[in-house]
Length: 338
Image 1: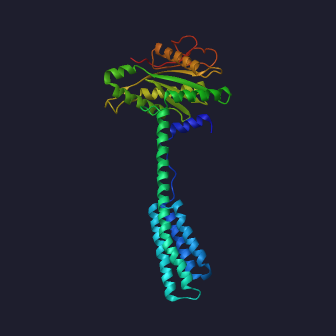
Image 2: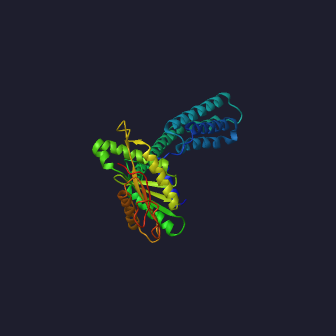
């Protein structure tokens, strides 16, 4: 699995692990009961196999520690004692050929006395095994929560800054090997501070969560978005050239512009616009250099009136496609936010 596929799996996977579906509890008990019935039947019907049948009966009861719950161990133990005692009483009463009461009856009686002790031991071991399984499940859930806390932003559910930096470094190394193109974008919500000042931080937090949801819906599954801090977000356009990344950003910008966000905290919601800086990854650039280029492009978007995407080419500066861009940048213009 490639690095970006791993990141995508983490990006779309649920926060808590889904345990493997266990076999129905009654299946193991049913198999154990079948083994007990066959062992008792062999003891009653085949004189030459009575010792082997009693051994098989004890082994069947002992194997329950690996597959039966403590309650099922008790059921299997009671069934084994009851069936063997019934077979012994029947043989003693009928006295069929090949049955020697002092030998066969004594052996069966000893096993009848041994089975409760064996069942108690198996019951205790089964209980410890079940507690161990529960503890392992609890530990796995705790580790999953810790991993979520270490890699996810609690407010938006997106990757946090630390994990996004790790993913950027991984993808940069992959691009360095010439395996795939890579584009990176830095997004900032326009006038977000005014939302906090006018409506309060609860509305601001709700807006950030809605922006994260809209971005996840608008971007492709192979794109990875994370919260960079405050109202800033970073998007990794994996296996994407400059034009594909620009289309994704414009799709996101248009979707945000057509929605009212923060309705969970403010019934009327608010309108949100964003500015973005987009840059292709350049061979030889480190993380700090790439972030500086993104910050420069985002600053250009703010200076040009906000609500737009400013792009930086991977090599030489590209010719401006806008009407109010500086040299070395290309801008996709939209009406400026008030």
